[in-house]
Image 1 (cartoon, rainbow, N blue to C red):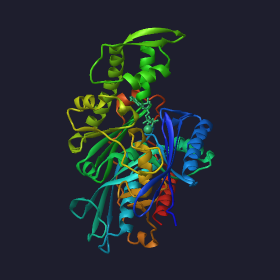
Image 2 (image 1 turned 120 degrees about the vertical axis):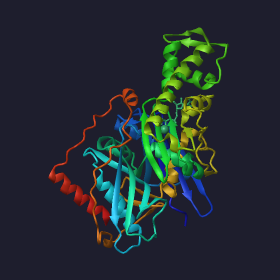
Image 3 (image 1 turned 30 degrees about the vertical axis):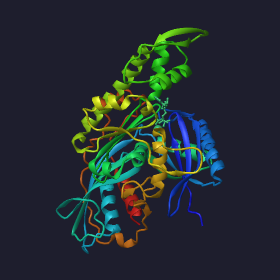
Image 4 (image 1 turned 45 degrees about the horizontal axis):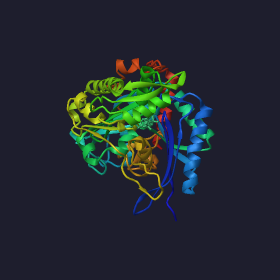
Length: 457
Ligand SMILES: Nc1ncnc2c1ncn2[C@@H]1O[C@H](COP(=O)(O)OP(=O)(O)OP(=O)(O)O)[C@@H](O)[C@H]1O
Ligand SMILES: [Mg+2]
């Protein structure tokens, strides 16, 4: 029997890409692929459900036609726009001294309970990044250990209910069910980071069409994520404005002549907006200056975000840049200078076997490949996913009622998150939702308790 196909759909701001892959004992192979231009999205967020839904369906149809398979459930990406991150801590007693999956679930759920998730936000990922067993710190995996106390630090990524509602609706209207929703930057990290880079700690920045999504992986998981509403399409717009030329021409110039290594002295002839019969002579030095200014500013904002995260000293693996924008010549060298000479590399997604002509080994498919890998085994060893289910190395754990026995709740105040978006980022983030710290009413607290208890079974 053929293994269950995995369908990943990356809903990017310039392209929507769908891929179907199958895992067998020997390999993980791509079976189908489809890509269309995004419609109904702005800066990574769905703004027109009908248009977005049509694009999703077109990409899905292309992929299923090639694969000859029609998976009904998809793992879809969500942009980091509007997401909020919260850090929390959980502590439980282990009365029978042995840490099983049930205790691990209990401690992660306790950390989740301790966090004040704003009412209008929903959980995307609860990622435990540090376990402590009795007094022992830095435990990689507490499973099977003997202890009387288990503690965990978690990074909780949430998204506004409204953004999730639109995403779910657009996917549903395309005739596809959602299996999981995954933060785009997290998926890109899964696709690009090597085990050594994870071990040493690394920062992954997916530089796409209209957005940059940053995640920092330290210890067992992601501990920081940030978002900037700027991408390669902004370079195109800058060129179009500076050179008075249509966007399609500006895009071509960017791809063909974009090179940050050194300004060139040649001239090119380009059409002028409004009078496309007339050709204007433009120096490539101007092209260089326009591109350089935008990329330098973008990288500086990102470097500043990494600095403010306070995690710079913990990322021995350096910075991995991925996404379509990283195909710009000389970007890596400029990033090295701006990121204080940290190691920087351009990350192509991990190889997936493919007998079909299309290859996904392009930085612009990092999120897509990450979604497929999330569907098999990769990601954080333990995680509570967007369905609020505990995944353990990708197994969904069925927990018996015994998990509530001897439950000791330790309610702690939620820690202030170091993940607040920086002011600079907010400035470029149009339409940022106002974030209000909700004060929970007694009714809400009771419903939260009930919700939490039901999750334990
Ligand atoms: N050689 C190149 N130089 C600069 N930019 C490039 C190059 N090739 C492609 N791009 C840009 O990459 C962008 C697409 O990248 P990608 O597919 O990663 O974005 P996306 O996933 O659709 O968007 P986002 O991640 O922002 O939602 C386009 O804006 C395209 O112009
Ligand atoms: Mg993208």
